[in-house]
Image (cartoon, rainbow, N blue to C red; front, side):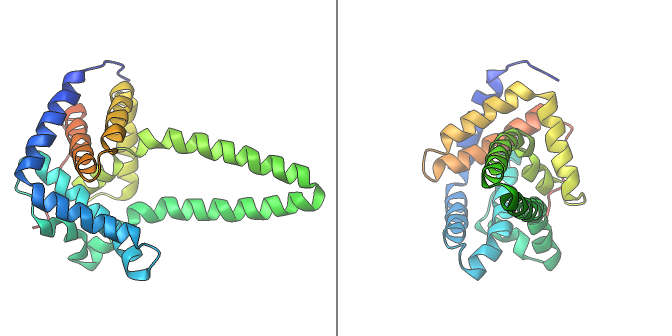
Length: 220
C-alpha cells in the first residue's frame, strides 16, 4: 500500500487530457452527447439497452485518446459491432445489478417477516440496512473507479478480473486514487467538458500508477 502523494500525476494528467480533448474535440463531444441522450431516455426500451455498450464505447474512446491515437465518432459504437461485444459490455453492469436485485428481494422478504412480529423491529432493520448500504456504496467507489477501463483494456479477461485489478490498484495507491476521484468529481461539475476530461484523467492516472497494466483494447 502506497500513501505517497504525487500531484504531478494529476497536473500532468490534466494537461495531457486537455491536449487530447483539443485534438479530438468533435468525436468526444458527439460521443458523450449520444451517451447522455441514451441515459436520459433510459426509461424506454431501446435507450436502456444502449446505455451499457455506449458507456463501454466512451471508455474505449478515452483509452485511445490517452494512447495518443486518433479518436473517431464511431468508437462510441464499438460494443455494438458484434453480439459478443454487446454482451461483454452488459456483463460489467449486469453482475452488480443482479447482486443488488437479489439482496433487495431478500430485504423485502425479511422485512416483511419482521413486520409480522413488530413494526418497530422492521423499521429499525430497514434503517440499519440503509446506513450499511450507504457506507458500502461509498467504500465501493474507489474499488470500482478504475475497473471499467481495465475491463475495456483487457478484452480477453472477464469482469471479475477487472474488479479485482481495480481493487489492487486502489489498494496499492489509496491516497492517489482518492485524490483522483475528488478531482474527477469536481471536473464533472463542468457540463460535457468535465466528463470528458475526467474520463481521460482517470485513464492517465491508471496507466501511471500501474504502467505494466495490459492494454489490449484493439477492436478496429
